[in-house]
Amino acid sequence: MSVETLTSSEYIKHHLTNLTYGQLDGHWTFAHTAEQAASMGFWSINVDSMFWSLVTGLVFYFVFRSAGKKATTGVPSGFQNFIEMVIEFIDFSVRDSFKHKNKLVAPMALTIFAWIFLMNFMDLIAVDWLPQLAAVTVGAMGGDPHAAFFKVVPSTDPNITFGMAISIFFLIVYYSIKHKGLGGFFAEILFHPFGKWGLPANLLLEGVALISKPISLALRLFGNMYAGEIIFILIAIMYSVGIGFGAFGGLLQVGWALFHILIITLQAFIFMTLTIVYMDMAHDNEH
Image (cartoon, rainbow, N blue to C red; front, side, top):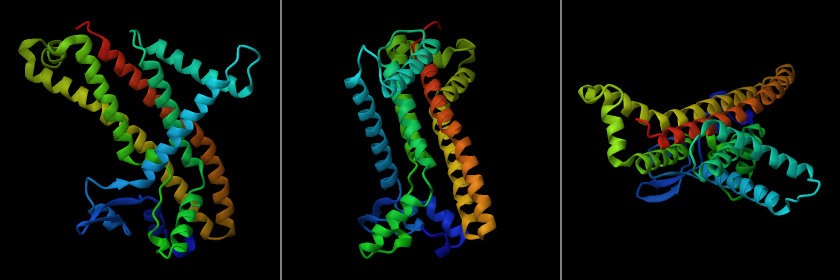
């Protein structure tokens, strides 16, 4: 979407609006304005977030599947060395934070780290390239290119981050009940840490601690990636001001992109590490 065709506020709003499909006035359709997208309610689907999350998931699957099929006991290629380095890093993280036995945890940790990293990595693609491609496509089909909303970073969508976090939450509850028993699970919530006479306080503390796990996972990832996306958009606006601001914006963009590589990796690592820790706590029945 060209900066020259929109005001700065319109440009920012356009880039932060999802391509939304939902029910409007009794029929299912794509939203043509941000107001329409907001009015579609809970059952609407952010098509761009779903599309790119699936694409990055498939990239992870086929890359690691290819590495597994090509693995050799001889001299490994650079690609195999890189994949083995990632797997060894994940294995070390799991061994360091998870002291129980569960064959699900290590593959899950690898999937979380690689998938979130790939979704975050989409933030390093120039903010206008894919939205402009979507606008050109819609215009060629006779539609309004200004209504071609297209966000390309799934982790800037709270629906995606909460979806992952809630999935982790269900696993936490499942393994807590499996290893502690249903009675042990509720006893921990009702009687820990102050015993049976502190039941109201126990329920408040343990209930908040349990519910805060998926919320903190989702909001931390969403907040950091959303803020990073806004900074890239603000830098992009500088290109429309003039040559001087454009050149300065180019330097800022390179600097922020280099720093953002650390952020996207760190956010994937934090999400993975907290998941491992929460799973370890779910398996711990000392109390």
